[in-house]
Structures are given as structure tokens and as C-alpha cells.
Image 1 (cartoon, rainbow, N blue to C red):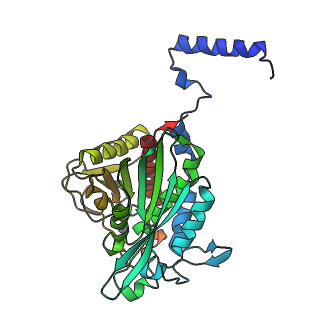
Image 2 (tube, protein in one colour):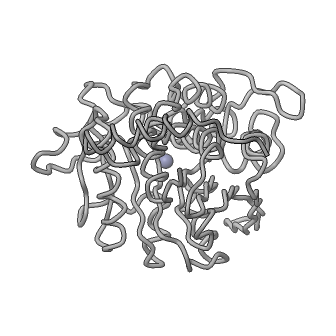
Length: 344
Ligand SMILES: [Zn+2]
């Protein structure tokens, strides 16, 4: 073992004297870097937007070494091997590369329509916690898309806003979270079938126990901001546990100085996304959405800023305000990390 040189002691002694003289907490020592500012600085808008481009057919992807173009993520196309709908395969391959130590689970569920029963999949990636792995923070988004006319959906449902913005955020989380250690487990869930009656999230909660689920941040469509007011909606609902997650989300926006405004919706929250399946099981959950609903809250978003491209083949990336969506993505990633309890 190498002996410690004497001048190392002097270095520490001088640092401790400076600490006491300035009345600084030990944590503020420069080499004890706080994790969350580091995580914030590591987020990258170009990486995030790149996922949106590839998931919405604006850029070719490589799956199993072969090029492909994802022009739709409609469930009926995605799980029947249609060559223009391989988003699930693509995300599965990317998740395996980004989180090699993560636990990746393909979660099949039955879906029955008027004609027959199909087997569809959710994708779950668990990054195990270090000190309280049985407790988990869920960051979720639906990966499927739809357009109003079913025949068209099989061909072109780019869903850049709805909901490649959410999926891109989970993939950015998969790029960054494995660099850090957390007390609790982080579970990133890509639901399918959201556009067909929240099928994926409801199925997930039928065969997964809610024990240890501390809270859920669900992301659904948050890149459209035509008036540039940077206002979005946090759908919290009325469960006390949801309020804890919602408060943590808005506190993150203030603490890290993200340039965002929001409606904080409790009794007026929507039930039209995957958080609803968690509310039904009494699990605290919120959904972040662009200014899609006309909520008329005091101090909230002015009116409504509804997208004319909702569930249309024109929901493409160039319609989005990327810096606005990216700040909401960062708020979600930071809140997930805070709730998971970062370990230095
Ligand atoms: Zn959606």
C-alpha cells in the first residue's frame, strides 16, 4: 500500500479551515459534486430531439444492423411485424445498449377487439436502487400513436408530439440515469395501447403489484407551444400521494430555474392518459401535458394552445417548440432523480 504523502494532510487541513471560516457545509467541497446539477448539465436537447426524429419517421433508424423508417407506431401495425412500424423493436434494442445493467422486461398483455384477441407488449426497464431497491419511482410514457382514420394509422401516424416527446424523455433518462446511483429503483415504462383505451397501463396494473411504488411521472404530449408562453399542465388529481409527486415536480422547476409556467390541476385533472390506471390503484401519479385543456385557473396558462395536428399525419417534429418541450423533459428527469434519492 502506498504511503500517504504529508502534503496531502496539509491540503485537507487547509480545506477544512476554509470550510469553517466560510461556514460552508462539508457537502459544498468542490470534489463532492452534487448529482442533480450534474444531471441537468448532462441533458442534451439535440440527443432528445434526435429520438423524436427517429421515432416519427423524420430520420432512418438502424434495427439489428438494418436501416428502417418508423412512419407509424399504431398498435395494430407495431405488433404485426409491419416494416414501417418497428418502434418497439427499436426501443428494445436501444434500451439494451443504454442500460446494460438494467433489467429489461417485455410485458405481454391480451387485447380483444370486436374481431379477435391480440397479444401486445409494454416494455419495462428497471434500474435497481442501491439502498432501497424494493421502492420504485416510475417514469412512464406511451409509445403508440394513432391518427383518426384507422386505415391511415397503419401507414402514417408519426406522433412526434403525441407522444414521441414522452418516449424521447425516457430514452434520455436511459442514457443518463445509469451514470448515477440512487437509493430507490427507477422504472422506465414504455406503454403501448394508450390510444386504444389505456390498454397497456391497465394491463400492467393487472399483473404487477403496486407494493413499493412510491410515485409515477407520466409524460404525454408536451412539445407544442404556438404562442411561446412556455406554459404546460400538470395533471395531479386528488390523491394526497399524487400531490407529493406534483409538488416535487413544480419545486424542481423553481429550484433549477427552468423557464416554464404551468396549470396545477387537481379536481379538474384529465383522466385521458396512463396515470389514470395508477389512480385506480391508489398510486400517486401525475401527467405532464402541453397547454391542451382550457382550465381557466388563476395564475395558470392563458386560455388554451391546442395543436391542430392532434392525431393527424401532420404531427411532425417541425411543428414543435423543442426548447419548451425539452425543459419539461428536464423537469421530469430531475424530479425522477430527486424522488429516487441520488447517492453521491
Ligand atoms: Zn398521448
